[in-house]
Image (cartoon, rainbow, N blue to C red; front, top):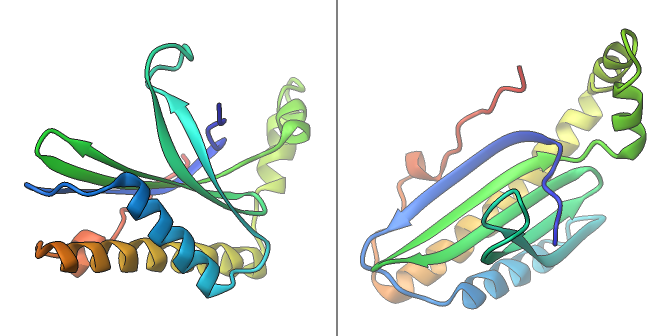
Length: 165
């Protein structure tokens, strides 16, 4: 059972009407594209999440692409006659940072100060995000084209910025 990232950075979802294809086919295509891009320090794995926070009930498999503290969780699944794809970009904080955050008064201030990113860290996050999004979009475009389905527009490929406030 996988853990959710501690901090949510952004997400994207799209439903394809009257489209059915294999979740595993999509994940395999994304994995191949990630490998082809030779993203440094990347780890790709299949993870499962429970449908409820209580860890009971049905589980759904996601494709996880991880680099350092950044985590991309990608979902592809049939939904009735349609097919749904989403991704969530998050950041893990780690046990030590969570422990410091619990120190009364000063803990949250220390954690907040440690989360200020350098240009290098911001650029690394943007490069990772851009590369994985490109892989998801290319896999999606390739499968949709072979199925004769309308591709998402550039606007539909965009993700909203998620605020951590």
